[in-house]
Image 1 (cartoon, rainbow, N blue to C red):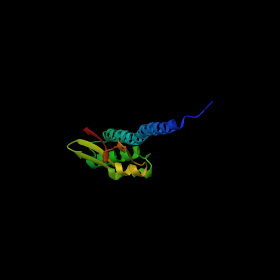
Image 2: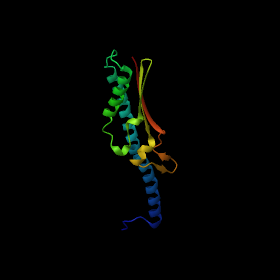
Image 3: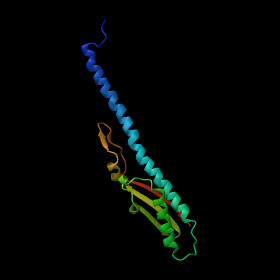
Image 4: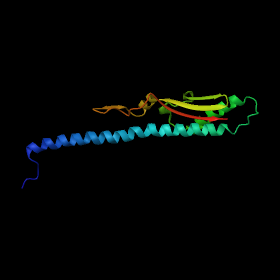
Length: 145
């Protein structure tokens, strides 16, 4: 009794394995590679929203109120995102705060190129670059005082 495949079928099994492996790898790598940018973006949204909320607590009659609101918001964002490792190259220069006409806006612009130091972007045939991300990950929160 024979326990192995005929010679003609061995090549077909290898080709099927390659096709299935490429599809499986693309799906797996897509899940892994998109989870990190989504985690960062969600963290940026949470940090900017919390910064706006904390800035409301300041006394509007204090001297230097506008500068205090902006510095409080920026400090709140930095404090909320202190967990991000240094290899991600996140810094305070990527956080901008504006307070014009009673409207406080807190924005984070994180270059996607910084993620390439942490995870490689690969090019899959027929799919393209994975993950396909915009040039910057951006989160904004604003509040009218």
